[in-house]
Image (cartoon, rainbow, N blue to C red; front, top):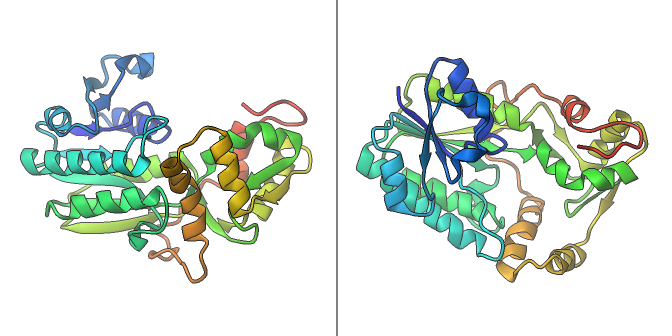
Length: 295
């Protein structure tokens, strides 16, 4: 079976690639720079250089694919994230049509069902729609809040605070990237489904940022306090980092849209959507204790 994996050097894609290798598959790693692939996978994967925003490039990279794991890669700094995702959506849809890809697993997000009003997630919604329009089998993985997002706050956590634009009492389904990869790999290796399927990946529990800060404090060995960043303050902070208006809308819009009153994920938490890795166990692996800066 020929399985193509995008963002093969990314947080989830790299794990998907390794799981497929361990299952006896020689996957195609769609990459911009083959040097970023782990050296120990040399000869076990087939690197193919491609630009995910270019339809001809993606069509060539996915030729003969039985399965495709698709992730929209991050936009380059200074570019419009939604325009970037639109180009990715057009490229993957064209490749599925022209190559007759047997089935696609798309890494989407909770909130994509809103279709608009959720910042960067709107680009995932548009990609879902582009893949749906092909008529080919597609599985949308509606993922929760990545635990690995905390790595951008590692220094702050070491200093005892965790700042967020999310309301501190708003519970989110926190999920470990490794668990997303496990679900994706199982679906890629399993039997083909029919038509369009949506599967949530919710992690083991819904947790507020206040609860998350308390758990992180127990792991790192000192109290951590959650701090809410109001809308205007958060947007001003992003502007101070040099982000453009479309970039600010993409980042800030996620918390603004998904914390709006009345929003609930389309998929309920159940045995299919619940994955095992807890925030505490993830943090114990990725964050240091007692004054050491987190890795």
